[in-house]
Structure formats: structure tokens, C-alpha cells
Image (cartoon, rainbow over all chains, first blue to last red; front, side, top):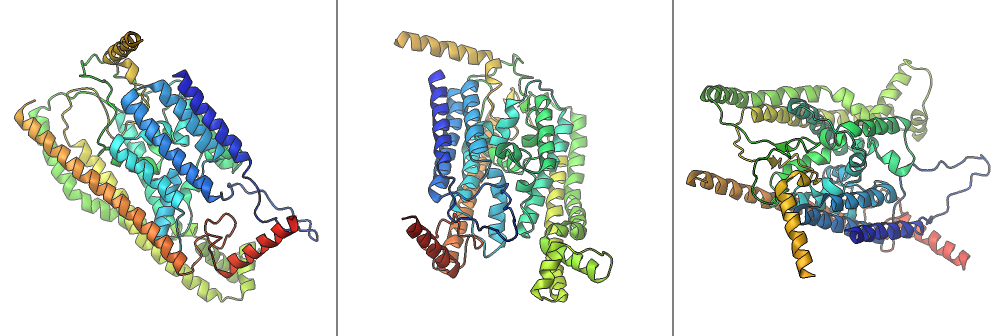
Length: 435
Length: 82
């Protein structure tokens, strides 16, 4: 085990040292001797050579494979922890959190909607590989590969449990965030996931102060609430959640048959352990059946109402688009509602373009937001409706189980199972006998 | 486990498997479409890196005016270094 840890740390250090040698400029920046202009240092990492992008993909693939093995076969929390630290160092601090699978959603969406945009192959693979692994092995990406999850997991010291109703309600935010990220990426307005990534400023040791404060707050919350970003905000986590419901193999608390000792009951800091259910009383069954029928009928209405609201918000949401912002500004300046002139409006006027053309362009973009708003709102309505329906559906469970969707495969529950201790003892004996 | 439960379990597993491979197929199709689009854009002579030659993966093969001047500059810089 210790040897394994040394190997992982060794690989991490050698990759970090390799990285020092690739930071050369391909084109020298121009000198602004006449104006004494100082070129500001960028806050985002520069582009990397192709070969290093492919190395990143290979490392991601290896980490996902190793994580699957450690979670499902070896069942070792310690090894998962070591891999998590490696991922934090490599994908977080060395690669400065970019490209990450979470943000890659936006590149894929933009590629679908913008006919002149092509996604780099490495980004496509960063998006696809964790999803494919989730389809077969569950959320092994969240377990030990995602640097955003790792940084929160490391500070989780005094976990408190959150009631199910609150957890479900807070998770709704992640769906809204996913829908918003898709809307803004599809309209070419902004990559909001990257812009509001709370931990990337830590990885780059540089960034917006507001985001840094949000990140610091999230880290403080993470001391008590297990991985708040992963559970209540992460849009990629939503995709992984849904795909891991279909996974072929998944985490089991016990390696054998559950003896219902209840020792694991409170072991999960993410509230992912599902307790056995009792039989539903017949009176409750009848009521729930009626409630389910009403909710099924209400679902399209809810979707329509939310879609209508989403579309109505187009004036606000379209302000994320630079062209709409510029058109608004030009209009305010032309009508004399503002006196000062911004750099953007000055640059626009220098092009000699007619404001009318700009207004028309902005109007088209707003119309796009109106249509997108229907989908955005409809999706949110669908999620709310399905959540309500979920409450009315009865599921029979006889054993303590790791929830298919909610389990982050961290392996904390393994050691609480007496059957697991038995298995480890047996393995130890077998190893001793073989020597 | 009763026969009925086993039947339900099998049906559920079958449905899960069908959905799993359908999702896998969808992901494959998305990936394929994205690769195909990238290839098409390169073949049509459309810049795939928003006009930024620095760090572009296909700079060596690229024949766009911007790329040609970037390559010229690179060669000149190499010559100056020598």
C-alpha cells in the first residue's frame, strides 16, 4: 500500500517537473516602448502543445481505471485517498484546473450550436471518458479523479448530516445551473461554469477576488458539509448522477450479504446510504396513487409555466451576451441617458457601423434567448415535476445500500461493515499462508 | 426471492442494460459528430482556433493567411536564433 502511494507521488512529481520545461512563448510579445504600456499577465493558462494534451488524456484514463479498480475491487479508502491527492496535484495545481470535464460541457454545447466552432479532441475526451466510466462503474470520477471534489474532500473534518428534503431542494440548484450553462454556451454568450468555478483561483494562485471569496466560503462549508459543490452545484455531477443509475457495477457497502447491523447507517458524509424500507400502509398507498396521478397531469402544465417564465426572462439573460450589452449601451448613449463613453462603445463607433445594424443583431440574439428560455424553463419544470413524482413513488429496499445516483464512491463506508473486516482478515491470512 | 420479484428484477436489469448501451451509443454519436465537424472545418479552410495560431494543434498543416504569416515569423525567429 505504502509502495503504491510512493509510486503515485513519484509520477505526480515527475509530471510536475516535466511541466516546468514547456512554458516557453512561441511568439515574443510586442514591446510598447512609446506608450510604456505593460502587458497584463493572463489569469488563464496558455495553450499547451498537443502532445501534453494527449498525455493529460492518458493520465485521466489511467486515473479513471485505477479509481474503478480501487473502489470496486480493492475496496480501499486509503488507496482512493492517495489517488485523490494525486488528482488534486495533477489536474488541479499542475494543470491549473483546465481543461476540466465539468467545463467541457460548454465546449460540446457550443460546438453543437456554432457551426464554426470545433472542440479540441482532448476536450471531447475529457467530457466523454468520465461519463463512459459512470455508465459501467458508477461515479468513480467523483471518487478520486475530479480535483474540485478532491479539494473539498480533503477539508471534510466534522461532517454533519443534512435532511433529505433539504438535500433534494438544494440539488435543484445544480439542475438550474446546468440548464443556464447550456443556454449561455449555446447562445455563445459565456462559459459560466468556468467563469464562476470557485476553486480554479486556488489552483492558479490567481483570479477574481469575488470568486476567491466564494471558493474560500465553500471550503469552510466543506469542513462540515461533505462536498457542497459536488452535491448542490456541479452541473457535470448531474450528468454523472443520472448515468450512474445505469451503471453495470457499483459500490456495495458490504462485500457479502448485508446482516443489517446498522453500523454503516451514519457513515456516509454525503447522505448517500439508503436505509431498508418498511411496508407501506394500504391507506397511504391509495393516497399516493392519487397524488401520483395528479402530479403526472400537472407535469406538462408545470413545464409550460416554467418555460414561459424562462422565455420572459430573455431581457435579463440576454444581457450576458456582449453584443446585447453593447447595443444597450449604445442606445443609452445615443438617447442621452448616460453621459460617459465606454471603451467598447468607442471601439464600435470607430468601426463606422450603423447602430441600427447592431440593434438588429442584438434583437436576433434576444429572440434566440427567448427560444432558449423555453427549453431552459421547460427543463427546470420537468426536474421539479419529476422530483415531486419521485416522492410519491414507493421503492422497496431490504438492505442498506449505497444510493446509485448519490454515492460518490469515496469508500468511507467500507470499514464500518463487519463483513468487510472479515474479508480483510481472510485476505491477510491467505497472504500469510502464501508466504 | 420469489419468482415474481426475480422476474421484476430481470426486467429492470434488462431495461437498465438497454438504456446503458443506448446512452453509450449516444455519447459515441456525439463524439463522432464533433470529430467529423472538426475535420470538415479543417478541410473547408475555416480556422478552428478562433484565429489564435499560438498553441494551435494544426498550425504546421494549416494554409490560412494568418497561419502562413505566423509560420513565416516562426521561421524568421529560428533563423535569427541560429
